[in-house]
Length: 319
Image (cartoon, rainbow, N blue to C red; front, side, top):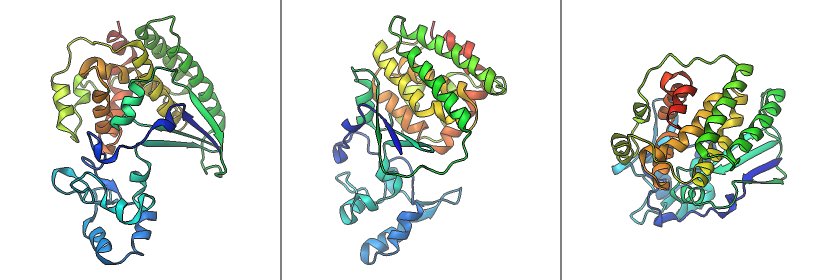
C-alpha cells in the first residue's frame, strides 16, 4: 500500500500527562470489537473494572461510561491511562491508539495525518514555517476493500492538486486565494452533482453553537466572537486550508460533494479570524466538531444547505 503523510507527521509526539487538554476527557470512547475480544481474555481486578464501565450509547455502540467531569474512567489523577499502564497501549481501544491521527483509505492508497483536535498537533500545524508538503512511502499492507468509483477518485486527485496550488500561490493574499478556491470548487461541483444552498438559514455565527458541548470554553468563544475577522498571518491560514483539503477533499469520492469540503477549508481559516487568533482556538473547534458525531453531522448539513454558508456569502467574510 502507498502511504501519504504530511512531511511533519513524524514530528508528532504525545506529551501524555503534561497535555493542557487531555484527549481522555470530554468525549465518550467507543470500545471496538477487537479490543472487547481481548478484554474477555483478561481476569482479575482490571477485567472487573473494564466490565463495570462498559455501556451502550443511543446508537447501540459499546462505549466506556465517563466518570465525573467527563473524564475517561481509566484516566488517573496524573492524567495518565491506567489501562495503558496495565496492559500496554496496543490493547487500548482503537480510538485511543490512533488519536489524534486520522486515516483515509482509498484502495491501494492510505492517507494519514494529525488533527487540530490535539493541542500539540495544533501547535505543530499553526507554527509550521516550511511548506505544508507530503511524504510518500510504500509499505507491506494489503489494499483496502472498497467500492469507490476509480474514475472519480483519480479525477478528484487532479482537482485537489489544483486546489493545493491555489492555496500555495503566494503571489496573492490569502483572502484572494480562498475566493479563487471557492470559485474553482463551485465550477467542479457543477460537473459532479446538484447543490442546494437554500434549505437552511441558520445565522453564520449560530452554525458554531454545537448541540453537543464538549468544552464550555468553545461556547464562550462563539458568544464573544469578533464582529469583523482578524486573520492570522497568511502562512498560518495557508496551513489551515491545506489541512482541510488534505483531510476531506478526496472523501468527495463517496458523495460527489467537493464544494462542502472546500467550504470547510475556508471556514477553517475564518475560525481563528472570528473566535481567537491562536492555535488553541482551532484546537477547541476541532475537538468540539470533528470528534463529535452529533456536531459533525449537523455541521456537514449546514455546509451544504445553509444559505449563509453559500459561496457568495462566504466571500463576504473574505473581502
